[in-house]
Length: 342
Image (cartoon, rainbow, N blue to C red):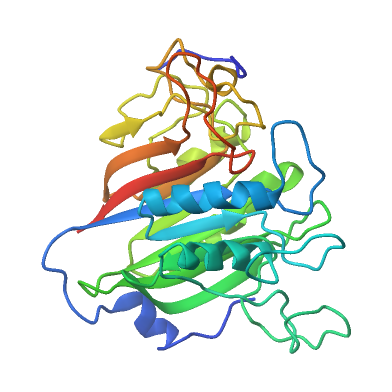
């Protein structure tokens, strides 16, 4: 086991309509609940040095594409994607890692779009050189990809966190999306927090989401870099729930197994969301105690009144040897939740 247990209980201009209308109105009323499949994947930046167990992006790319399509994901939060120009790196279908992923999904039969393709918030969005500022909802490696067959983009934006740590600035990226079949709208956000500034960034996230969500249902995904055994979650998990959008698993600080699990079904819920390139699931999950919840650092939060039908950690492994089958898509596992919009 890799984690200790405690068995106790700059905002962007709008795309199509005004911000006020985007967050308060529906073009049509839903005829019934809509099962929305949401996901999150830290793709591991293609420019990072290779480490044991993690293949180059070109080898991981088809696995990520297959998993996203197989899980029929409607909207995906992506973190840590390469967004700049790097010597020796070329992509199969795009100038950035997030465009390469999106274009790969579409080449494989999907119909996906990014809420923003801009690399930088500059008049010339492809380079920061002699940048003349222009808000393009560029957000470094944190992006939102959505299925255009099911969803349409109403508005979008990105907020740079005030507190920063590390060489790459971190952002909260958000969008108001509309279900085409029903007209139902919801507020979706994704993020990637930095270890030394997690608490400050997390508090700002709550403030920013509250300022933009209006009366819409909320879904927030991302790499929060915090296991539920870490003290930061003693503050942040209740704060998210009190703000109106709690964890879809109902995780609590230092509590495992879960008390009153929120998701009706958990698929491989005992597996950690971070695999670290390890090739045996027993090394990143509670294989012998499968009633426990994996100590993940990737989360999905959703409005408290929404029904969460399923939580899933996507990883293929041999049930006898527990060895991962094929190539890992990243040092993180794809996570997916099915959330019902009423």
